[in-house]
Length: 165
Image (cartoon, rainbow, N blue to C red):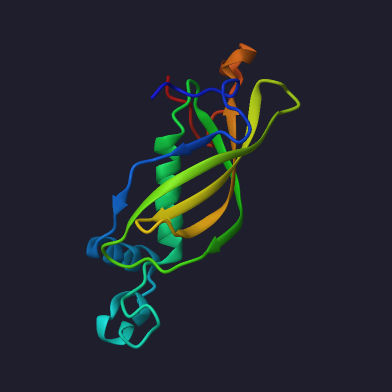
């Protein structure tokens, strides 16, 4: 896939990534990282009594997976400076072990910052399972360097450090 740039992305442009099958290790990792060991996530006997009938993967872990998939899908000529925020995040369907999910992004809006050397991109994000059902959706906003501005060296350094060359 060709590298993206602020200037080449078009409103309503859609990008889709490869699938990822979620397994038992994802459930254990989510419980360990979050500290949330509620039986709906880790107890198969308890989960049989729930509508899904199986343990459910944490919504926060699904969000982290989506952000990782986003980083892999949005390969820019210049670096993404910041994830500015997530809005209207909604968990629409259960995700259980063995489900395969992929990410779909649609560019909803783009604008230049007041300095003119960066762009703000807003994407509608959908995490879709193997049945075509949206399991998580929301909007993400990202700041990117606009390589056409000719000023990528003005990109701010992260707090406490320098940017890698």
